[in-house]
Length: 446
Length: 87
Image (cartoon, rainbow over all chains, first blue to last red):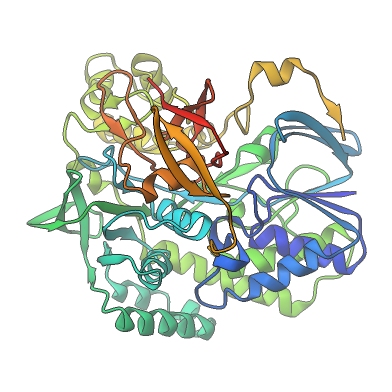
């Protein structure tokens, strides 16, 4: 049996290939509905070419050989000779299943960088605004400002506008001219121009204001402070205020590498500083019988995830991989590289924050406390600072702050964050919270 | 979301009665009625709402029927559920 973890674009593409081949497959997804963070659910899907999602849902849910299990959160996994055991939480109890082959498509979540007031109600990620809207039919606030960097801001702002939200605008930190540095990626991906055109039309339809070279550097719950920024995000001054009750700020994505890390799959640091898996041309990881596809092998969007998911499943089925599919992945990877070059996140944000700004939201550790752990207690890495301050030791286990804590410490101590430190803060021994009570109840074999 | 055919769900938050739509998360149902604070933080007693919205950040944790650390952005509202702010 083939196990697939995650039912976003990559997982669904893999499951579709396996379903068409009649292979026995189980898809474990933590969400209540298929689609992952980007597509979410068919009824709610809106956006460029998002009708594709329905076809994938049908082929996976309608297939006799595919078991699709929603609300199943895999919290740990064990690799043994010839098989992989997955331990997951489902309907309040712990269950286990053993598969021969595994395709990991665990996706990514929004990367956040701190600014004064980012702790306050109303400050959230674009993913949160999108999840509220698409998953629950709720508009996040009365006046919404979408900010940060990257193309994901477009579907979020447009989706909110389509739902009737008052979107004050999109505040993009970088200039679109940066795309001119990647001409080959643009030439080989003309379909992306169509996607851009789709969003430009919507932007005009809803009279959305788009500004470039600016960022939200402060928020007090009622008013956002915007500043012109350099390409490294350093503030250039020229500060303006805008009244809004929601700031949805997103700075790219953090791949979720936890499960593959538990299984011992080799990782590396990508160009944008995020930690991803090493995979070969067949999307096969360093561990036997484990393939990895989608954002966890490099942030690249839904189209690349679909191609990678298909390649992974074909390889797992010992099927040949057509040249056209390999070329599709190649050109979309070029595009992903161009995205990383166009929408970099420099460390200039460290100048926006105030001494009292909380960097670790869970343990309420301020910027001043983290700096003190370096200047007064001689911490040289995030691990040491963590022990002094508890930054990154709260409920989220550093998922939100650890990268920012490392960057601050590197900035304070005048060094660079090492790859080893990046890999270390991106991994955790347990992939989802599990109560001792549930653990003690024992495992109910599937 | 196609909410027309879905059932209304009644629950309480800090003793006050709220109504939401079946399938909505606790956070979404409360935010739909204008709630802007799910809890106050342990040390500085600052207000918190949702942040990541997808179960990563644990900013929105609430007590559901006596069980603490439940993520309001993921846990769906249930008829008669007693939800309280976490200290």
